[in-house]
Length: 124
Image (cartoon, rainbow, N blue to C red; front, side, top):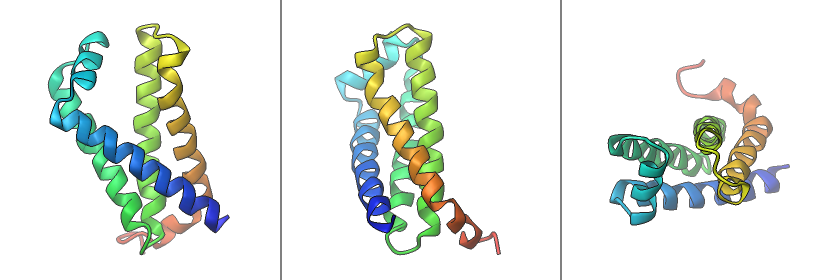
């Protein structure tokens, strides 16, 4: 399972780094998306920061495995929020699929690494 965990961790870190930087930098796609969903633009920045924090936790997880579970949990919750947002405005499945897939991968990664949470700094 270690190889699977590293592959999923790398995939999520890369995807959420790109998405987070896109939201913070104000890419047209993300600005228009948040307008379409009826969400304020400041929330786009907050979402981008949360995504970058989750991706950073996954990157730290290469050296300290307890961070993988934390990063996956952050990104899983963010992904669930994204899915709910798409469902709320009745977006087609094609537009909802990617965030749904990333949420599922995050939940799987969290499940694989949940036992490492006991070693997370401050939990001892």
